[in-house]
Length: 313
Picture 1: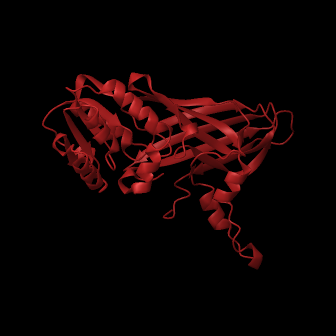
Picture 2: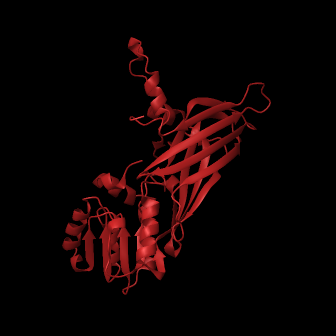
């Protein structure tokens, strides 16, 4: 997953030019009033900070460690909004404000809501800056998972074929890439072979713990080849706006299996999924057990982690 501090302009624009951008603007329109003070966490190029000011907020604090904040300052000047927006290039945990805020815009995330220090940063900002009756724009994410048949996605993202023609053994590299999370939307050629299972509900009005540990169990409902566990989320925003990351070009993640597994209706899949924040990076672990119902073969078990897929391991 990308570190938001290292996003470039294309990252910021892509994240706001899909379902998320429309939902955010709808939420801001129903939330911002002329007496509001607003904090935009992870402001990037400042489009949401600018929108908040344009919608009447009396003061906006736009915070991001990324130098893209300087682009936001230029846009504010071009739109006559400079006097109402303070652009601050720093980590939010190092931020000091002269007043409490009525609204926190908390749109920072990667392919999944567990992204760098976004959750602890949000919890810190909520405790230190938000008024008692203040509003958090992103109120809640519900994260879902399913086993997917995604042959093209799996092979294109993970298979290591270069060198086969000259007889190179690339199995060490294959082991690395099979332990890396693959981010992005599923292609139209992919499909779910199980019903969705709920992974977690993240309520940003109360959340404190940035970690995840959950056991997921499915019964296969559709024949196919399982290539891994795919996660996505549904976002609920203040004012009743919402969107699904399935409608976006920026979100979603596949936790691939070491090898594809042929699946039939009735087969059982058990996955223990963990995400632990280490410094400012998540280490993901996924342990899988596949039971072929009615077959004499022993269960198929796979244990994987992004630590095993790291280049420095």
